[in-house]
Length: 327
Image 1 (cartoon, rainbow, N blue to C red):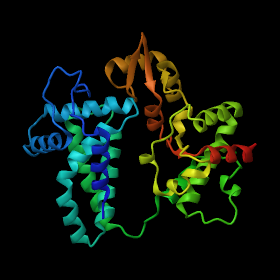
Image 2 (cartoon, helix red, strand yellow):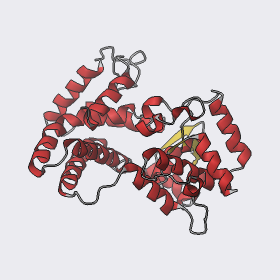
Image 3 (cartoon, one colour):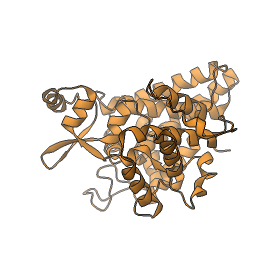
Image 4 (cartoon, rainbow, N blue to C red):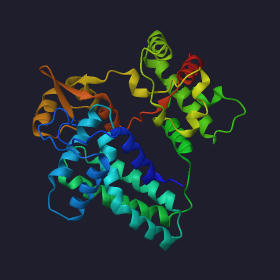
């Protein structure tokens, strides 16, 4: 049976699609260095360099840098490639921890992957690229031990997401999206997913004109906007994929602009614009920025991540049901 490590490897291999891997500019055709390996050979080379315990590795520094740039584009290919290359050092350790504490190996490896990805996000600002892989490995091992030693506080992802959504609702907000669903088991992942979508729609109804939401959904349903790829939909989503005849799921952030200007981002973060520009020059601004023309822009997904706003995947039907119920 495949576990989290296997899923990461399969995901990365699919993302690179059998093409030569270029860690310099992400396009072998445009790279001045003409010799490029396919992913499996590239992965082996990365593992060997990491195992050599060099103080710094240009290959790993380039992988981390490419991962940061890919994150800004909304592409997780290189971030997951870093995780996949690190799993070679975690496989044996996960097996030892599983045997020592009689813990489920699949659970341990899932926690390792989650911890590594959390560390990737946490080290986005202020951490040298050369230190990122080591910190990800350390966090993964610590998470594995924590998972193995604790058996009494388990909960499903769906439950925790529902609780998080409820906790984030404003105190004066009295509409509970679960009220739309009657006589249903909230622990069912499909139901929990539906509640999340309706809760999101109920909140949007307060701040976004309904005609804008409806127009956005119409674009999704008619194919004028790309839907979330099937590989990103969970098993519970696939059971509801054809609610409206197609996979119309989308990220909550897809409704917002891809980039916002630095002054707007600074205002949201409670930073004076002048201080924001100084922080960008010093490399201490909380979110990665990019130049567009003569203006600094901040990637919306990065801003949401820093503010701990979950970028959930929702279905238009659920969002519209929640908005209608709230109105």
